[in-house]
Length: 176
Image 1 (tube, rainbow, N blue to C red):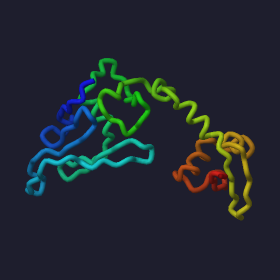
Image 2 (image 1 turned 45 degrees about the vertical axis):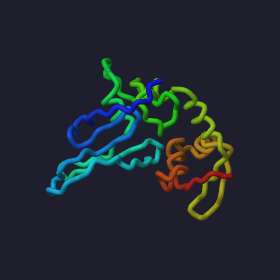
Image 3 (image 1 turned 30 degrees about the vertical axis):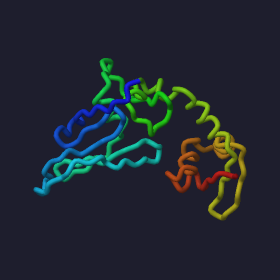
Image 4 (image 1 turned 30 degrees about the horizontal axis):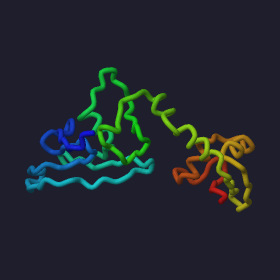
């Protein structure tokens, strides 16, 4: 396997940023929109709530938050069929090396590897539904709570992951 790091321009940010075959992003030496010199440096990345590594890119005083795996794929991978998704082959969302990425369909990406088993296991965790008066109702799984309460699973899951506070008049937490 060739671990030599190769750098290419970030599409749409030529002369400002480059992305490497190992999944790193750097800003190039340039003069910013305020007339100040900017030295070349590797950008600090951060994880979004889904675990994907991202960086902030700036152009003309505008910031854009972008996923590193998409930058790597756009720079290094051919996509002749115009496939919409970029899959992490080893299922590690922080491994953005070009050798770990592939373009794919939405269905392929959503059913790849152990994803379905991980989702099923997450839906089997015991949870607690809490009414506004503080009464607690325990369920063996998100599926059971959704069925008994007549709610959507995604709404319950959003509460459990902190994306929502309430769903159907209940708040939810893991019962561990």
